[in-house]
Length: 227
Ligand code: CA
Image 1 (cartoon, rainbow, N blue to C red):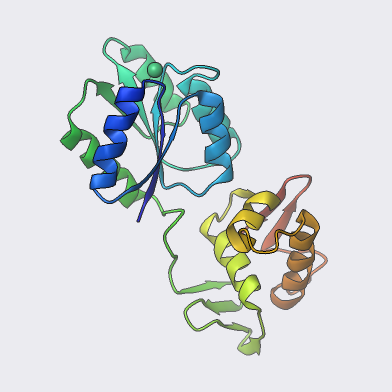
Image 2 (cartoon, rainbow, N blue to C red):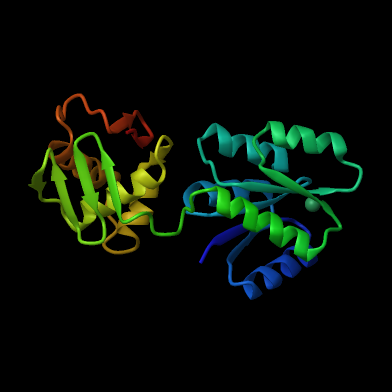
């Protein structure tokens, strides 16, 4: 089930959107100001964002710009008001994927949401069952992995770390995102735990663990998967 974040300060609009999207089978979260919306979007897997333009604390533009600056590539549909034609162009330049003008029909919005979700790889959906990079082949369904044809033993956690990094290929993943996604609420460990797991993982999948080519350190933030 795809998850949609609505960042909208008008309660009636937010509630109406949520009711309709939940009815359509989406999981929905509402934030009512730009700052809270940005924080939520950065810390949680989301498949799509409906972003109002005029918001308290941070405007829709600022939220959009900040998300893209942090490599968060979640599709964004801007909700603009009539007469904000110039703003639409600016929104698209800042990295929004589409926009709808208020008042809009539900069918139009749903069609645009479907189009964006089809185009983007979902955050919350399970990824393809196998993945290959360099001489490594991962089979997520059977928890089986090989490097240069030789079996390598990865723990379930290591598979989950790889799955999460690979689903955000090319983007910086924060240690805290990995903690949330891979460890969840179970024995909430520290970011050092993440680093230790990455070190072990590199020894298994990297040809030269000291100079990794797949799991790259982004200093002070987290990791990035290349390959
Ligand atoms: Ca507003």
